[in-house]
Each structure stands twice: as C-alpha cells, then as structure tokens.
Image (tube, rainbow, N blue to C red; front, side, top):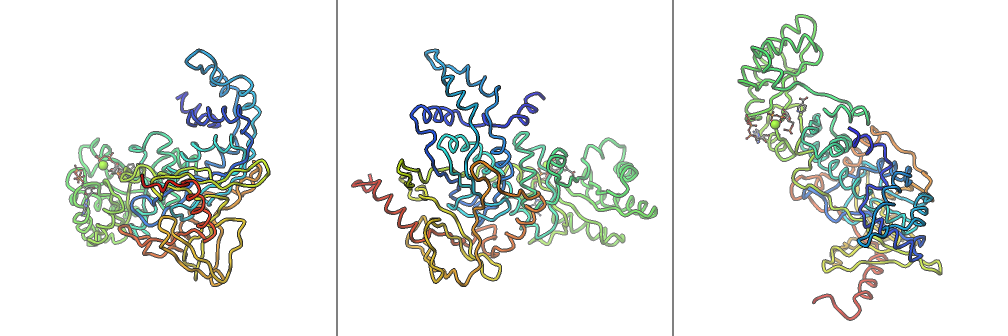
Length: 495
Ligand SMILES: Nc1ncnc2c1ncn2[C@@H]1O[C@H](COP(=O)(O)OP(=O)(O)OP(=O)(O)O)[C@@H](O)[C@H]1O
Ligand SMILES: O=P(O)(O)OC[C@H]1O[C@H](OP(=O)(O)OP(=O)(O)O)[C@H](O)[C@@H]1O
Ligand SMILES: O=C(O)c1cccnc1
Ligand SMILES: [Mg+2]
C-alpha cells in the first residue's frame, strides 16, 4: 500500500506531463518565466450528446494550488534525470528556483455544482508563464473527470425523476482515484449515497447498501438467509430476491417481513438485480401490496444508465430506488470530457495585454482570446443565455448581441436591463492567496440541484436536447475575428 499512501500524501506537483517541466525549464532559461499570461480551461462539446454539463472538481484544484510546492523528494527525482548525452535534464540552479517557487497566480473559476456550457471558461488562471504552465495537466485531470461524472450522475438522476439513486460503482471504477473522485462527483450530480466506504469517510457522503447473492448462496435456503440478515439488521432489510426464482424470492421476503412486523420492525424492501426489471417489479409490487406491504420499496440494479431508467419509467415499472454502478462511474458511453487549457493573452514589456488565438483548420477549435469572463442572464429564475465577454469592455444594459462562437450567423439580442445576471467566474485565489470560502459538499450538491432547476427542461432532455444559447459579446467576437484574419495573413486557410 506504500504507493497509494505516498500518492495521497504528496502535494501532486509531479502529477503532470513531463513537457510542462521541460517547458518550465526552457521558459526560465529564456528569461520568459515570469512573464504574465492568462490561460482558460474550457470544453468544446457537452458530453453524452446532452444539452448541459455540471461543473465539479474545484475543491481538488484549490487543494492542489494551496499546497503547490516542490518538496526535496520531488527535486531529488528531477535532479537525477539525464539527457541522452548523460548531462542533467534540469540544471541545479533551476531546481533551486523550483524549490523556492511559491504559488502566486490569480484563479477565477465557476463554482462546483454550476451548470456550464461549451466554450465558456470553467477556470481562468493569470500568473507567471511558468506557474500557469505547471498547473495545466493537473487542473485538466481533476476537472475533466469530476465534471464528466457529475454530468453523468445528473442525467441518471433526471431519468430517475427525483427517486433515490444509490451509487454502486467502486468495483468497476477506473482504479482507486477513479472510484473516489467518481463517488464525490456522483453525489454532487444528485446521487443520494455511495457504497464506497472510503468515499464516505473522506467526503462525508452517506454510505448505503443491501447484500450480495453470495450471502443468499451461503445458506441452505433463501428463507434462512433472509431471516439471518433480519436478525443482524432488523431495521435495514432490503432483501435481494433474484438468486433462484425472483417471485418466489419476493414471497420469502414477505414471510420474513411478517416476522419482523410481529417484532415491531418493518422491512425496507427488496432488490431485483436481473431479468426483465419492468415485468418483475410490477409482479413484485402486486405481491407486496396484496400481502400488506404497500410501503416496501423496490430497488432495481443491473447495468442501469439514464436510457434504461427512462425506458423502465415509460414501461411503468414499479421501481422506487435505483442502484447504479458501472455505467455511472466509468462514464461508459463517453470516457472523457475533452476539456482543454489554452493561453488567451500575454503581457508585453510595456505592460499592455496582447490577446492571443491559436489557429486551427477547424474553426470550432479556435480559442477565445483576451481576458474574458462569462455572465448568465436569468428571467424569473430561469437561465436565458450565457454571454462570454471582455472584462474591460462596458456592457450596454439597453442591448447586446451575442454571437455563436462556432457560427457567426447565429446571433441573439439580449436586453440585460430586463434580466437578473450572475458572473460565473468567481475569485478563488488572488496573488496566490485563497480568497474563496470553500462550500461543504452538501452545499455544492444543493447548488447543483438549484442550477439544474434553473435550466429549462428542453435543455435537460436526454436525447436531442434544445441548444442553450451561449455567445460571444460583439466586441469579443470582433477581436477574435481580427486576430484570426491577422494570423492567417494572405493565406485563407483553405489549402
Ligand atoms: N424492461 C426492461 N427494459 C429495458 N431494459 C431492461 C429491462 N429489464 C432489464 N433491462 C436491462 O437489460 C439488461 C439485461 O442484462 P442481461 O442480458 O445481462 O440479463 P440479466 O438479467 O442480467 O441476466 P443474468 O440473469 O445473467 O444476470 C440490463 O442492462 C438491464 O438493466
Ligand atoms: O450493474 P451495475 O450498475 O454495475 O451495479 C452494481 C452491480 O454490482 C453488483 O453485482 P455484480 O455486478 O458484481 O454481480 P452480478 O452481475 O452477478 O450481480 C450488483 O448486484 C449490481 O449488479
Ligand atoms: O449494496 C449493494 O446492494 C451493492 C453494492 C455494490 C454493488 N452492488 C450492490
Ligand atoms: Mg451485474
């Protein structure tokens, strides 16, 4: 277990791509290391062909930045790295520089549990080039995964229409942190509990569960197994009924439920983990109701995701609680969010900021330049549109036009004076100092619920959702166009 322990006790500065360190060295060597820059972290497409994304992971980012420090052991490792000719990769003076390096960036970010959309920044980092660069990979690793899983969880919870979703993913998750971060993000996205005990301990997520087929199989009969479980946990009986014959299993659960009742206890319900979940849940409901257990819950599990849950809902399956593992914590149908981290401005020697774009053959990949932020407009509590804008340009309250960053012919006129507004990037660090009050996980989950509530249901549809309007404010659109044309010079990019 040494590796695990070391990993979690490390402050993660080496959890980065090697090229960040070689670039840092080269920046330092060329004297550019302290030049100020602005980087933005954003994604280009909502995952799962959905209409929204739920931001998560900021708490980890804060922790990483707060503890950003090269320790002796990190430097010892870098010190022995050699080039092909046997010379050290990093000269000792640079390692000394790293040893004395203190985190001094400004970070502004969207709060965890906020609904977000493509192209708008989730995190904005302003600071010396070396530091901005050294944050890239770790920030992307954290935000990409937790945001992906929080979004998947939100979709699954939308499909469950407010019924509890229990997260059962640990055994199928992508390794140790894949499981822990997923349990955290799944809780933010709306799951009520996790089966992962360590996630319970680390994050304060309620832990819950039933029992496995092995429990039943270890007894001579199913009835004996249910009875023994009831003896051990009279207040927490959810009997797994499908080991041998599902409907007979329900009858056995009822028998033990009656014994429990005679002792003043109520069974919570049953779990079905195989077969046609619509058919068996309906039959089980009838048996339970007829036997006088109308409040007994029916839990369903077995490779569930938002689509199967929706289908079961439309089949009027009698299911009250959903146990979801593999397809949630692995984001089964889309394994990565694809968020990127791009430089958008750099400070010149005369103190002015130079906005930057990176050209791409695909116009959709040209980044948004400058020092920008994103603002959400609301009407009667519902989100109307998001505007990405340059922070130093005035917004006319009488009217602005926002322009689709991927298609300049798509535009929307907004009258800010008629809306409530919220600036989505909040100050997190100022000159390396934490200025943000970190919310509890329960507060983050609550925010996620309210945010999803503020989104029209057409954007939350699981299949072919209505596109939520996100656009560039005119000045920003203009700046982006000018920079693209300037960079392309006479070449029109059609070769
Ligand atoms: N009524 C239903 N409508 C749509 N999908 C369903 C329905 N009932 C079950 N499913 C889903 O169909 C799949 C059935 O999986 P599978 O073919 O492995 O059968 P199984 O019942 O798990 O078999 P086993 O007895 O081996 O566990 C699961 O993903 C399950 O969630
Ligand atoms: O299906 P998931 O969404 O991943 O949910 C978790 C699964 O894990 C458990 O059994 P396991 O799959 O280990 O064994 P089983 O398939 O034989 O029931 C449980 O019974 C669920 O089926
Ligand atoms: O508690 C359960 O029912 C459970 C836990 C993990 C995986 N599947 C089910
Ligand atoms: Mg299974």
